[in-house]
Length: 102
Image (cartoon, rainbow, N blue to C red):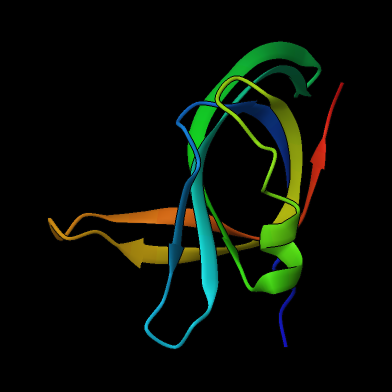
């Protein structure tokens, strides 16, 4: 089995949306905006991205109850390709843990 692990921090760029699936599984969807400086090939480069985060299940969605637009958080989880309704595919993070950064 191959590893699939991502840890990324940033600010919540869209209000969290909470839904429950027909099977009764709670989900929280949000967009995380990350901005940092990273070293690559000995040079500093500015990095910026927005990535969709999905938190599913009772345990992880309990960590999302107090999340609001603009808060700084750290997300640990795995990435997956998800096809949107318009047919465009994107990578999303399926969160295993969400920590608030003060």
